[in-house]
Amino acid sequence: MTTRVLLLGGTAEARELAAALVGRPDTVVVSSLAGRVANPRLPVGEVRIGGFGGVDGLTRWLVEHRVDALIDATHPYAERIRSSAVRAAEATGAPHLRLERPGWTSGPGDRWHRVPHLAAAADLVPRLGGRAFVTTGRQGLDAFLPLRDTWLLVRVVDEPQTPLPGNVSVIRDRGPYQVAAETALMTANRIDVLVTKDSGGSYTRAKLTAARDLGLPVVMVDRPSAVAVPAKVSEIGAALAWLETALPSGGTTAHR
Image 1 (cartoon, rainbow, N blue to C red):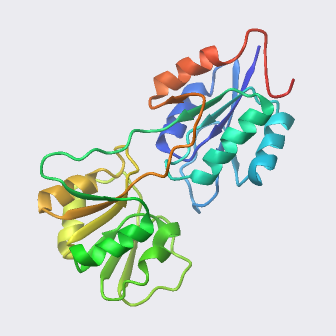
Image 2 (image 1 turned 120 degrees about the vertical axis):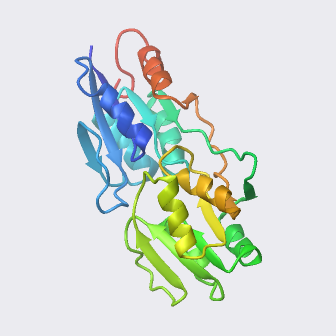
């Protein structure tokens, strides 16, 4: 019996899970990426790039491709696809798992200011410093553009499409990052406040260590409210164990 898995990904966890599943004689896995990054890191195995067209489109895809299990390993801030995954899985009856890395937690010496969203982050920044290192991604950049009296160093993977004012400097890069390099970057640019999302994981954590070592405040944008899912894990091993027990005996679900 072959198990067909749709893996919603783009994260390091999704790539790791795909690598663990590809090559299994009893498993066919398709990794789906949103296509918002021009040159994404691709997982091994079959990959599709682009949206599904909302809940209805994802539901049709699950049925037409006879998907047995849906694993959502998208970014913690990918709200739309997370909601669509829940509703499409419910519509088809496909077992659905959320694989999500834990968020970051502050420790001794950290000066974190947690805020609920990007607008709140932009409102707080001028009260903490005049030169901000903004690492919240290209799509959320508009929230910070009204801060004309604050110098912004913005790090993104792809070049912003929005025209930028003179107080914004852009660097294009992607993790993983090292503490020494992050410290040097902040020091060279005289950064006095760091802005980030609570993405979790090790790829970009070095900036938090650098900020702590430099005594800088950090504006931490909290994750959006969690969507209720039938099963949620934070480790690859747990996802693999879930897949072994998710399907009812005797075969597939979504295409019955």
